[in-house]
Structures are given as structure tokens and as C-alpha cells.
Length: 375
Ligand code: BGC
Image 1 (cartoon, rainbow, N blue to C red):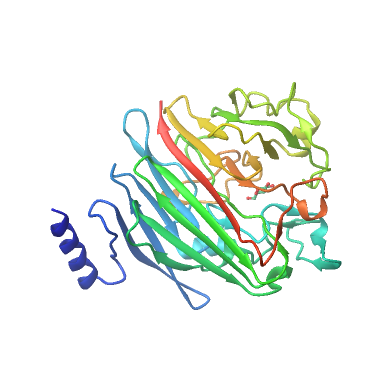
Image 2: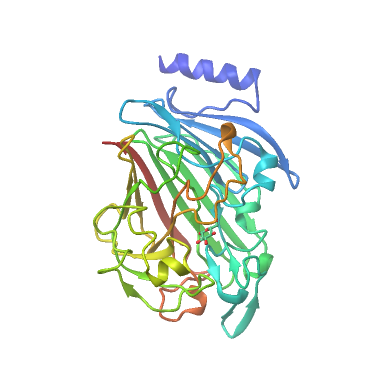
């Protein structure tokens, strides 16, 4: 059987090169199709199918997650993340759907930071700050793709070589992310980043989720658990003030599950400043699962597991229905939420926050898992 599978795979590769490729097991499969080219580089859409027959799609443009098809409690499968159908829409549409964001995810105040006595200036793309690595950050690059062979599950690696001072960040930096799609419906994201001189790093995946199915209503009825005893309050430009505030007695206490919409309209300073939830939660990092989203209507569950110290809980407050994604779905106000695992925003300017220094001596290594199930 295994030989037969490999034979079929080989025939597909030989007859339709560029469309099909295979991994080691006949059921664990990665197929590849061309989406076009960007800045002289080929862009591909990869379809990863696990032994359950569940499928995710990813692309090397922005090292993005494009589609996640998972069942509800009745076995009905639907796509629960935001993405586009074609490369042109990725280039012209919302810059961050499903993307890997770097070199510094989230904001750096006024686009400035100092390192080793040198002041670095970044592009201001979110007045008056820099957001998500600047306008041509890692989300907007075609990464070098490689379908991994001899892995336990379908897996694809994307690599981006960032030249010294691109978007104002020092260092020739090499960023790698490996996406693995397990038979337990987990997307494992393994990151490795190296540099040839001191720099700063904050990397995340910016997937939006709606567990009803993307484009199907808002996420205010999703139940959220975040194992965080504190969060970082922000100013009106969404830059942390430096305070580490306990969640106790606030609408930011998600240590027991609450619906997203339950307290989002409360008269609480941080909900006003954030226009909803758009804040970094300081993870307790004690239990395996750091955050969980549950949709009572479909039974779908998303668990987020990370080794990072924070997670940005963002309730899609800037979505406005102007973006139409896969299958003609419209992404309306608060129709998706993000749980961006990360270091804290603006850390290079915040001496009280955990260090984001990346040196040539020690690579940045990190893993985050999005695990899907039902109950
Ligand atoms: C930020 C939001 C921003 C969004 C853009 C989030 O990480 O915290 O303020 O609007 O990304 O997609």
C-alpha cells in the first residue's frame, strides 16, 4: 500500500511538476500550486492534509496561514481563518491576515529605539508609531519555501533573509518558520531567528479566527480563556505605558472563561483606549494551554500554547467590512479575533519589560501551537 501511494505520488509529480509534491507517507500530503510571482520570487499555495483528512493552506507570501478547515461538533468542516483567494489580493488587501510579522511585531513608540548607544529610526506606518515591522516588514515578503521530507506530519519551512538595515533594523537576519500540521489538528509554528549583529526581535503569527467560520457573524459570542494575571495598559496610541496591571476585578480577567462581548463595552479606561480589546496579556506560562477560544454554537475549540511571555488579544476593532476574502466572505467589524503570541509591544523602549535583544551568539527559538478540537 505504502509503495502504491508513493508510486501515485511520483506519477503526479512527474506529470504535473509544480502542482504536486509528496512527503514520506501516502496519507500525509503536501500539495503545491503556483500563485504567481512577487518581486521575482515564486509564490506558492501549499495544501497540508493530515490523517484525519483535515486541511490547512499556507503560502510563502508573508509565510502566511491562508485557510484552516476544521470540523464542528457535527463533523461539518469550514474555514475558520481569514485569507484571500489570490496573490493580488494578498498584496493589495489587509497586510496582516495570517502572516508572520517581524522584525518587530506590534508597535514601537514613535518609530525609535536605541541599542548599544545607537539610535535607530523606523518608518512610521501607524501614526505616530511603527507597527508590525514597518510597511515592508516580513509580512510583505516572499519567503523561500521548502516542503520538508521525512517528517512525522506534513510540514513546510519558510525562510526570509533580511538584509542589514532593511526597515531600519540592524543585522543581517535569517528568519525561519516551520509549519507542521499534526493528526491532532495542531498547527505547530517553530521559529528560529539568527543575526550577525545585535538587534531586536519580536515575531508572531497574525491569524484572525472566527470559529463559526470566517465571514460568518462576529466573535462577540466566543468564549475566551487567557491564563494571564496581568496585562500591559496602553496610551491612546496603543503604546504600553510601562505599567503591569493586575487583571483582578477588571474586564481583562479571562482566567475563567468569559464571552468576548460580555464586558467589551464596559466603562473601563483601557477598553476605551483600545477601542475594545487590543492589549498584550502577560501570560502566567504555568499550564500547558495559555489561551482558549470556544464557540458554544459550533462546539469548535482553539487552544493556543506558547513559550512566549505575552499574547496580544485583539478583537478586530479596526475591521470595517472593506475586505473580501476567500470564497467572497466579507470581514466585518469584530468578525475575527487574534491571539498573537509575542514579546510585549515597544519592549526596546521599556526597560521593565523582558528583553527582546537578539545577539549573534544565541539564536531566537520559539514555538507556538494553534490546536483545534470540539466539545
Ligand atoms: C494590533 C492592532 C492592529 C492590528 C492590525 C494588532 O496586532 O494590536 O492594533 O490594528 O494588529 O492588524
